[in-house]
Image (cartoon, rainbow over all chains, first blue to last red; front, side, top):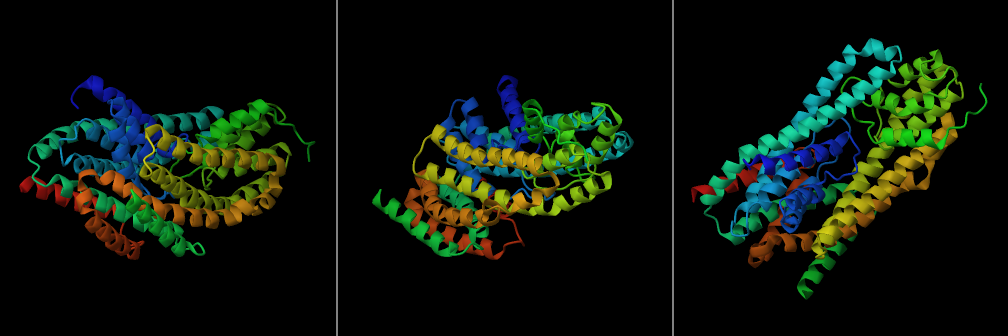
Length: 228
Length: 252
């Protein structure tokens, strides 16, 4: 990912998707299943993007973006995961594991970076308090535009740094990968689906009859698999 | 109290578009406050004296102070506060009303959107993926479904707020807001049950030979994580497990 011409569109995409996470317009184009697919599409392999996006979506099911809580920023993270997975062919058995790990780490840092931006916005709001209290349109709109622009830059910088940092790591790891391809994929999917299973339970457990509906759904899902 | 001021469609549209950026300057000091002022501003231009007038500046200052709510449900507040300002309600009454809106709009939105609608749409997208739907189809299912609810909620909120003003509380008692989360959770349970094994099967690829073992491990892992609810986050545990696996695979 050292080629700037390849990196720049991915950073721009991450900027827009990072912005969507909270600031504008929260249409959830930043969800992994969309964002990773979009990133991989830029690299010419949407199908691999959808695969890693679905895996990351299983992790993302767990995080509910309540107000001031800290949670992974999935927009930029999924661009990192989608592009790292798309750039490698099917011959690399550890590609999914490395891409998912890179995305999760990026999401973690992304969550931290959002907190820093919110603190910075607070300092700015405090400094402009008098002007806001006097009803200055220019200041109210200025604070809003600054926050949006800073968030846009945050997503671009975060994805750019993570991609540049992880690409050599990925090359090294995949060059020395010693685990069986079947086990490699099974471990990643196993961890992701465990998180998703617990997340689904967390979301539905309080609803009347939900546990039976969940069990019935699992039975139907397994029956459909058996019939394939 | 002034005669009811009509709000032109252009002003409503400007408010709606600004609502999409209501969290643009979200911060730990005023939370959504500046965003509320930013979103309500187009309507305040209709106050006596127009943009920059005394009434406009006082109202904009009032509306840009601390505010907290769910970002989609904040549309209700923006509409209702705009109506209250245009109706010439006393400032102290508007401020009390503004404070009272925070709690209900936060909890209703969190329960309906973050804890029900978003995960349900995510599960529906995973189900589509598991059923073998292609890239475009999965994207369409998720974004189409989610944003139909998202945009409808924001549009309804703004419209209800502008219509009812300070009597908007009655609109919050509607059946969708009260019983919606429970029904959505029931649907999510059924679809989630179907989706997880199918999505797992599609992602696992070469690991299909180990499908039975993986399924058992997922059931066990899911139960452990569910019991850890609130004490540990699965994605963080995932980072640890995947990092260990990558190190093991490199060291072999």
